[in-house]
Image 1 (cartoon, helix red, strand yellow):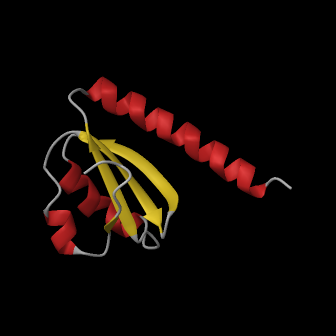
Image 2 (cartoon, rainbow, N blue to C red):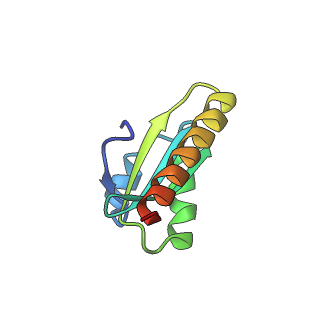
Length: 91
């Protein structure tokens, strides 16, 4: 499941298909990124974060081999999101 594949976040069936492995997840409201996070167990993380982001409609995941890779990728995604948000509100 690469990050460009969006899956319905309000579907227990979709979340149940997420591997219980280390990786990165991104939550979206429609196609607008809301939050990026990393976890040792993606399935558990998505279940837990569901109540924190009730407006999220979709999610995407990306698997990574090491915790360092996860942290670096989450940082990269958060930087990209800041640029998207700031450019959307300028002018």
